[in-house]
Length: 342
Length: 252
Image (cartoon, rainbow over all chains, first blue to last red; front, side, top):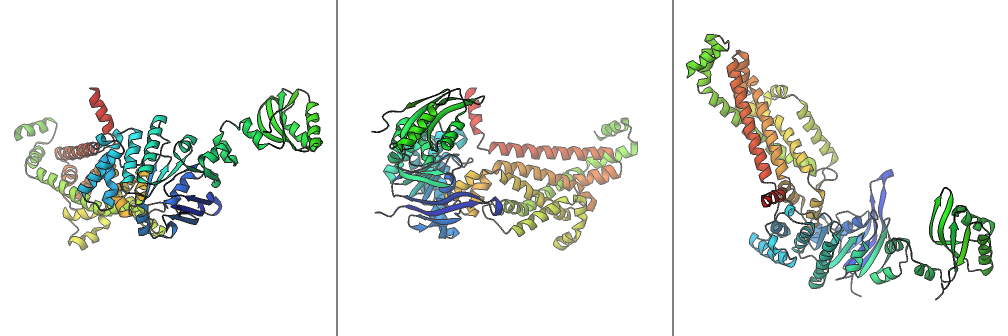
């Protein structure tokens, strides 16, 4: 198999020191293939931004290795690191354009850094303005542009460096849905036409669905799971993955598949006792461990209302015992959920 | 003309002999010369203060632990302490204290030119703090973006921080110039010239109130001119506010 363009091994990042030390990332292992659009998703605080900053070493990892395009980034000296960064473009949620420069001069900026002459830089910048569809705005200052236009300029600016990799740090999170789609399409287009590998950091499932081929789910600084977008979306294996794919709770169909071997019952509380004692006494009085697969109950004045989905143990005798016990409770009705087997 | 003025002063209750001498003094070449002295000491002192203070201010920001080019914490501590020390000595006292330095640099510690040394020394740490506070307004994200493009610390300072903070730096420059102008007014005490000396020695020392007021009025006018130019340039060169301006133009 081809050597991945980005290989992250055992990446760990801690902030602060001594007692205040916080682990932002813990033993992350990811391989990103040449030419793909790779997504990293997680809730805020999961460590996504830190992870992407460890790729171009805006954050220096506490431990682990980051290899980009064959170079071990953590081993580079300041000068080599700056050189290496020139082939890793990055765009941000806040666009981060130079406010005192025109759109054209913003795109010229990396070309100036590369020591290109003014004339050559301007010519290249004009080409890139065409690529991002903003040729008419070359004299505009960022303050005169909309969010979507600013992000296009930022994309053009990073393309001016001829990067091998494009890192997008919540690049569409400040944009409205329509503009988000346009920007995503542009990124996809760049990926296809220029063969630039893209790493997308986001907290929005939509973004991943729209453009990514593979995705990693980050949860509290650890990698929860990695896989193709189809795989992860159809069958999220981790807790974090499930929370992301089903933000409103896991649907029954999925639960049935999960609990394929067990019996599933739906318990309805009609205002009797609270529901915790039921589960507790099931365990203590009957010695049956019921598995709560889902619950939509609320306690009002210490009384429970709503329904709960319980998975019963495979053992027939135990399941029957539990069922009988629940049936004997006041204000609780039970029904078996049929057809949980295929 | 001058007779009318003398009469006016007398009608305000000024002693006739004093009125005549004040009008004679004010009508002479001394006033334009005092203005000139004030202007050039201010300009030169501001220039020298920025030669020292601008790099110092930049280092105070970039050399921090979280800065773009961290320096040894001990060095930063020393720099900060020196700046604070110089800032806390009242200018009048500093002026007397640095007399040996003036003598060393210029061969004399008295006179208008000699006053430039204490002015520079007093203003440089002030300038450093003004520059520092301007650069602290810099958006961290933009610096991060420049780093991601492979900018060296020097390039970040010259191509990103200074140009991006230009409006704020100009406003700070205006404040610094005015502060140095007002410090310079005290230079009369060590034999320096200018409007300050005129107000202090002639106006206050000899109780020539008319001279005092004329000197003060010219000082006020100078400050107004500097402030207006400074504000106008800062606003005009700030590209962040063009948006609203174009909108307003479209509206009318």
